[in-house]
Image 1 (tube, one colour):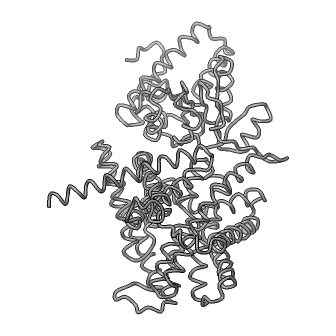
Image 2 (cartoon, rainbow, N blue to C red):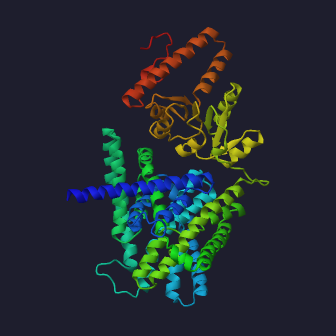
Amino acid sequence: MEETSHHLVADVMLGGVVLLGAALLAVLIFRRLGLGAVLGYLVAGIAIGPDGLALIDAPETILAYSEIGIILLLFLVGLELSPSRLWLLRRDILLFGPLQVILCGLGMFAVIHFAMPSFSWQAALVLGLPLALSSTAQVLPLLQSRGRMKTDYGEKSFSILLFQDISIVPLLTIVAALSRAPAEEGAIEGWSLVFYAVLAITGLVLAGRYLLSPLLRLVGKISERELFIVTGLFTVCVSAAVMQAIGVSPALGAFVAGVMLAESPYRHELEADIDPFRSILLGLFFLAVGMLLDVDVILSQPFFVAGLALALVAVKIAIIFALGRFFGLDNKPSFIMAMLLSQGGEFAFVLFAAAQSALLIEPEAASLFGAVVTLSMATTPFLMIFAGKLAARKVKGDVQLDDPELASRANVIIVGHGRFGQQVSQIMHAAGRSVTLIDINPQTIDRSGDFGFKVFYGDGTRVDLLQRAGGEEAQAIFFCIDDRYMTAESLMPVRETFPRTKLFVRAYDRQQTLLLMQDNGISIMREVFESSIRMSADALKYFGTDRAKIHDIILEFRRRDRSRMKAQFTSGDMHAGRRHSFGGDGSDDFSIADD
């Protein structure tokens, strides 16, 4: 028994060395060539898989475990989407998404029916509809890493991907309705599946409000980081398992769990803790996809398989571009979105397996179209290179949105180039500091460009974007954005990633200042504090008050304000320290000493 256990551990360790070593080497090479990590993972998987060097024996097992990476990805996306923002996206989710799945699915149904007349219409349908789905695991990290999630085409792409995950339910229902296999005892089918899915989502939302939020508050009081990781992973696994149990995409359950916590004060802590697991598992997922690629199928009919993959990409680009124009996007963002979503998706493998179990397609057909999906995924990095060049081109009326990774390394990074950030940037320039400017508003970027300021596009609160902007080399990062919900806790990932970089933060009011004061390493400035003091001083000068008296009044006001702020921070009560104020419950008499 002990010897068997020893051999098992050795096999696992050897497998880990092979997987991680192949991934490391391939991703380094493909990143160097500018082709992206995903293509590197796919090629590495092919090289070490059964049809390559055969260094890994069970790619199916690795795929099953690595699909947790997709689940974690959807959870993290959900964390960034509050219910109110989802409501704003309802038109794209409930109209754009269904039209994309239906039209692209029927388009590929027509291609398959024409190219493979020996297939029944049922087989062509259950193969064509899954090809309408795109790769969430490939597209969302691209949008996030390049700071494009909040662009028009980024939000529409996300809406489509979200509906695609939801569409697993009706697509599985279609497969079940056409099935030629005897029904499994106890299996949930048809509209019952839809009903149970709605019931499960409702249950998860209620559990999040009445069970999960109190649990997180308890964990927050204990202040053990490991407990946050355990709680986050537990939440994801429970939500995914509930959906999996009724035959729905587990990623949808994870997304619901993320949305439940989107307005939680612990959102950023959970995001920082879970993101590393997501990155590693997504890499393993693409490795497993590459290992499962049936190279013999491609070699037996290479032109046919390549032709189908190119037809898939072309059909989806044409239809999604037309839909983008119909829904109000301009030509360029419509084309970028179409290229972004042109590949087949990971859930196609699930649907092909279901169709095979339903006796609608042969195993050979499932392998053939699995190869088509994998090849279409391999085209995405090349299409994204073209899309990046297209996005960088500026024609009259367009705003050039460059990624901060293109910026020269600077002493100072300023996030937000509005009325506050502009003053800070000019003073830093006057002091001879090199400055990188970042803003997420295209109009602000365009307006700044008219005055000669180069501002890079992106969400400057994201750690990965600050890393690309050179945050590790910067001496200071200024957060000059009007973000009333920024707290010391939400900035913790930035503090931990750049421990030697000083953070300066613009606070909207006294309440936000108190939230930021929880980290004494952050320098805080209330946005109207100094200007109100200066206006008051000018007024006193106009009233004829002696200059020395004005100076003493301002000093005393500042001292009292600090005392009041300290009392509020210590007690956690906004009403504390009222005796330190001039007027109100405090004293109007300047001569009274205030301890």
